[in-house]
Amino acid sequence: MTNEINRLGEQVLNSYTDFHRCQLDIFKLMTTLCSGSILIVVAFVEKIFTHPEGTILVVLSLSGFIISLVGSVRMLSIIGKHFAVVTKCRSLFFEIEISKSEDINKLFEEKKEIDNNLDVLGKKADCYHRISNYAFLFGMLMLMSFAAVNLLTRPQMGRF
Image (tube, one colour):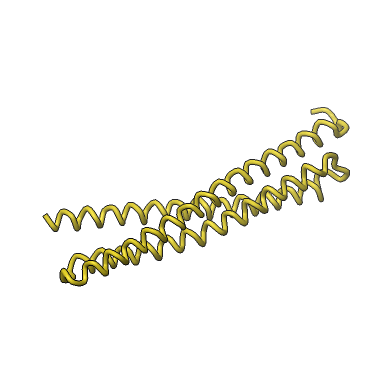
């Protein structure tokens, strides 16, 4: 019975760790996309459109990408803290398994503290996750709008 409980506990902790590794990869990708998008905006303004219209769209697009970039970096740090808490939870799980009955109350109190830390980190992560995603979408919409406005209003340079 205890072996089955141990196996189940280990599976839960492993799936939790795998989930956070995927989240880590997603936000690494988000930071890369935001950085690349900022470079695209700069290239549009500097090289492609010499006299751009709708410069407010450029400012809004850059703002969206920068906010998304900051949110993604913040999420990376929160996910790092999650890894630390999960590692502590894993070691605590094994301590509970091998401890004597007098120590078990202390270990359960420590587990409650870990759960509270995870709840706080989870709420922060949810907030930064939403901010990062919505700011990125906003930045992309503004970038596409800027490109469309300038492509449609620019004089025809020749026929294909």
